[in-house]
Image 1 (cartoon, rainbow, N blue to C red):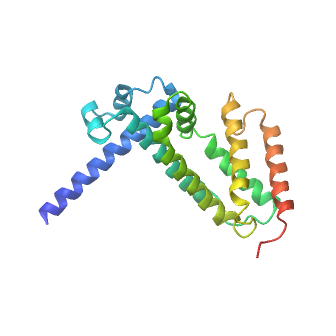
Image 2: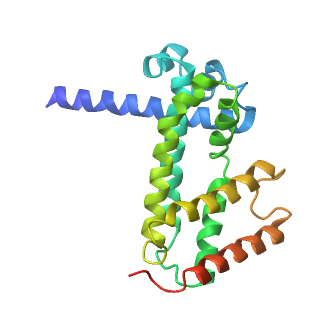
Image 3: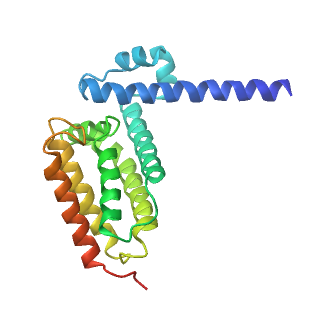
Length: 208
């Protein structure tokens, strides 16, 4: 019994250290950017030594990729928790798009923007991020299928998701102020409603 308890406590400490490091990396990427997110800065934010960091993540790149995976899983879970399953009307779809926009504009999601921009000039990072990007795409498709699977045919679902995500990512990259309520808030709200109207009008009835 004593051995089991000791092992459990060690596992919990390990999980706590990893979570602290990942959360500190998210904060560094959002506040400092990719270039200034050093292992030293991350360790200072997490309150752990660099030796502890390298025990869990042998390289800085390993840490950054794990952080991207961490953010992706957490953001998809947050989106699922915030969205109602009912998407029958334009207002329903607008609400879904609004929730997704909040996730895309969140400080945590800045992690992905920083890493994707850096990966354009770093072939190693680009290759290392590929599994995480594929996992995120699969998670988003699963969430979209749960929401829209009765309305949008399976063959069209990836394309519709691509339109939505690329639009929101474009807004996030171009926004000087990432708050959803910031200018040009009304223009964006109208754009989201137009997109929702297009989706509902193009797929007016549930697919059999």
